[in-house]
Amino acid sequence: MSQNPHLISPADLSDALGRDGLSIVDASWYLPAQGRSARAEYEAGHVPGAVFFDQDEIVEPGSPLPHTLPSPELFAAKVGALGIAATDTIVVYDGMGLFSAPRVWWMMRVFGARDVRVLDGGLPAWTAEGRPLETGTQAVGTAIFRPDFDASAVAGLGDMRGFVSGGGRQIVDVRPAERFAGTVAEPRAGVRAGHMPGSANLPFADLQENGRLKSADALRARMSEAGIDPDGPAVTSCGSGVTAAILNLAFETIGNRDVKLYDGSWSEWGSAADTPVETAS
Image (cartoon, rainbow, N blue to C red):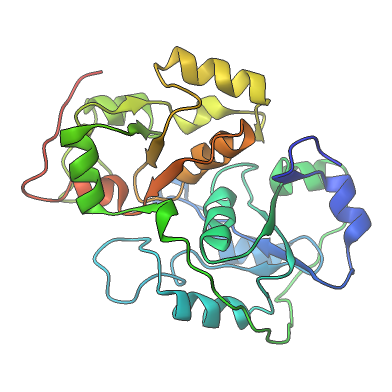
């Protein structure tokens, strides 16, 4: 087994295929600029038995933000319809290696699943080892997902106003450095460029190597270089709440569990009329 309890290797997942209580989730999601269709790629080839988790559909209906967490009841209904129970061993992966899968890893845990792993290296690692793929749409039966929502893992706009004005928790933004500095325009219309005052920047690309999460020692070192206390209370943020979860996975890997995720992230903060915004590094 992988030394990181939050990861599973392609070899270990391959050995577990077909076991009762195992749910495999293709959590691929791409930015519009990447020009890729997650669902089409899933249908063209996925890990045998995997179901597709649509990160644009399993959200709070009517929210003006792109990836707002749904209610526990809605999440349970949507995930149960995929044949997933909270008591399952749940393995999530994505088509880039380590990009969008941590968001679903985080969501599953927030809503009560206890044994959730990220496939180390994702689908690229699986295919690089010559492991089989399944095509089409996976037929599944329904399951009962009993939610147990952990509100303490989630930060909202009011929480973030408090962290910015009063401190007490490190704010770490994983967007690329140029977006954090505000030297490039945000990809979403109406969203200001820059960052929250007092926040630190640790681009999510710096947390990985060749599509895999770096070692605990390497993660600690990179956090320290970015001016972040690896063991201190923190809240993570990104563009819309997806890639921030890579940092939550990194914090969990080094043993820091006092970490929230700002669900609205910069899409919410940068589009509000009265939130303070800084530019430059």
